[in-house]
Image (tube, rainbow, N blue to C red; front, side, top):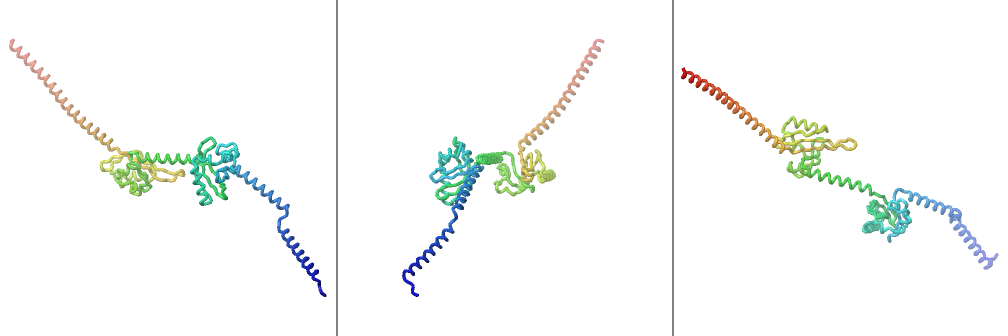
Length: 333
């Protein structure tokens, strides 16, 4: 049986149509239902709200800015840190006026462009009233938008600066002290010493580290040396022990062990106060006392002699008087 051309075309069209219907059905079945899309949007919106709620109540400052210096977002914490009543008030002013030095922002952006992020970047920001706050900043850049977090480290930095300043002042005092000062370990090896000690030892400070303290300063008396050494090693106190080095030098030696907050031994501070001049004065006084005693003894001898002579003269005068009296009586008779 012969099939006409028209029927063939009709059959082809119907086949094509049914095939395209299938494809359409398949395509439609692959896209999500409208109800499901709506739920996803709601869930996404809810997540964003929760996210911003968490960020707003975070103890760390958070912000988003662009490269021009506009603030896109700032959380309540950061606004409060910089003395603003609300994030909106801070957003109006922009970010550029918050920098004490705009070169810091330039350095920040240069590093962000180079590495894509910065971590623990220290920067000084100005509050609304113009106070300076030290901040620690971490941020990332994407599509010319900077997102970051800030921590206020003003108090921490002030404490750190005070510690450093105190350390510098202590080191200046340590080095300018006229007393010989050394930090020693339990084996009496020098851990550190001041300039006065180095001058007395006749070596640079660097060369003295690790040397035995006793190589440069120790009592000439062996028994006293052994006692001092034992006390220092045991972590006991020494208080103004008078020491003669045998080289004509005299010192008061004092020592005190230093421990950490857990009571662990760190080192012993040994302080030697030069009393050479004091000893010279003492020796002069002793010498003067001896001289005085000698003179007193001589005066006493002289006095005794003088008194003896005086007594003899009185006796002699009495004898002469008596003789004259006798002679006078004999003449009368």
